[in-house]
Image (cartoon, rainbow, N blue to C red; front, side, top):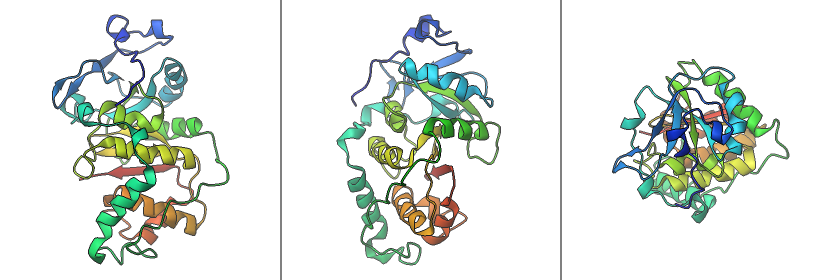
Length: 270
């Protein structure tokens, strides 16, 4: 995968981050992958749990240094996460609609989910339209969602610690670290990031949190009508069917209602 110059190695000799214009708390560099140590750190994360305000305080200075914030769930140590950067391609090499259409076809073949995906059928319905305008600045919404996740046991992120990742844009964070959360569904997480790029462009999403198999996004422009919500829900079904089929709402129409005005999208894969 094509990458930016990685500022993280400088933290090995300058853990405070002052040479990068940062004031970091004590933290750890992670270079452990399923294939052994990576040739450079994949991310840095704070040793202490994040608190409200942490994201806002570090997010902008880190971005100027070439690092983007994300909360990571340390309930399972990151050394035990399945990180596969060597098997990750580049998000820009994939078309989001092609990826979603392929997922949709695989999940709906033979009519196995006909009732669950109404009002749609086996044919991919296409991308949801972009809202006319964002309701809030994406980075502002990301900070709000990050604060809400801190200490919330129902968020899907048990122990949220702030991490910094060298990435071009927030949507690329999973690919930049070779995150393997959806590996049983999609072995190349760059294809997941390609979809996230499209959502970033249309809905102002940011990747706010990652667990071993959980992804939490902030949304600056959620759907405002049932029709638009159903179009977005179709993309969510293709992207992560478990979000609907194993969620509280087990139909696309029911799930769509939960997206109306919702500023957080959460996905998890078996």
